[in-house]
Amino acid sequence: MALIVAKFGGTSVASPERIKNVAKRLVGMRQRGDEVVAVVSAMGKTTDELMGLASAITTAPPARELDRLLSTGEQVSMTLLAMAIEARGYKSMSFTGRQAGIETDGMHAKAKIVKVHNERIMEAIAAGAIPVVAGFQGIDANGDITTLGRGGSDTTAVAVAWGIGADVCEIYSDVDGVYTADPRVCPRAKKLDAVSYDDMLELSGSGAGVLQMRAVEFARKYDVVIHSRSAFSEAEGTYIKEETDMMEE
Image (cartoon, rainbow, N blue to C red; front, side, top):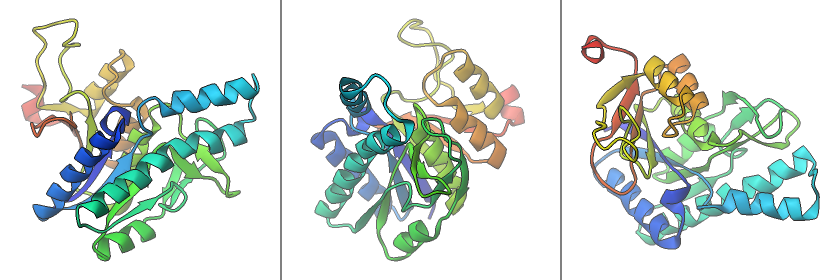
C-alpha cells in the first residue's frame, strides 16, 4: 500500500465530466489499496476569468483582495471533486489551503510555503476519506489568504507530499511525461522514463512547461519523488528523482 499525492491541473478538471473522470481515477487508487490525497487547480480558464473581473473593477486591485478572489477558483474545483467522489460511494473531504495547514510567508501573489501542518489531512485519511486540497493557496501569519503564483498548485502538491510523508507525488496534466524535446515541434522526441531533479530544473528553465520550476526545486530540497503523467491515460509517465547511475547511462 502506497501513500500518494495526486495533483490534477486545470485541463483535467475543466468540466463536470472531467471532474467525474478524476473522481473515478482516485477511487480506483483506493480500490487498489493505496491511500491518496488529491490536489486540484482551478477549472480551465477560471483564474484568467477572475483576473478579468478584477481588471474590470480597477486597474490596480489591492494584492490582499486579489489573492482572496483568485483563491476561490480552486475552492470550486475541490468541492466539486469531493462531491464526485462521494457520488461514487467513497467518503471525501475538501480543504482550502488554510484548512490543509499550508502556511506561507506574507508575500501576496507569489508567497512561499514555510510549513505544512498535516494534522487535518492525516485525520481525514485515518477516517477513511479521500482528502481534496485546493492548490495554489495558503495562509500567512496574519491569517490572510495568499497565493503562490502561476503554476502554484504543483508546489502545493509537492509540499503536501513532503508534509504527510507520501511515497510519490503524481502530477497529472494533458501531457504524458517529460520528453527530450517538445513533441509538438519535434516528432522524433522521446519520452523519458526518469529525469534527475537537476536536469528537470534545466528543462524547466529552458521553457518546458510540464512542471513548475519552484515545485521541482522544492522536491529536490526535500527529496520528494515526482511522477509526471497524463490525466487521460493509465500509461506510466516520467519520474523526477535523485540522479542514479542508470540515468547517467
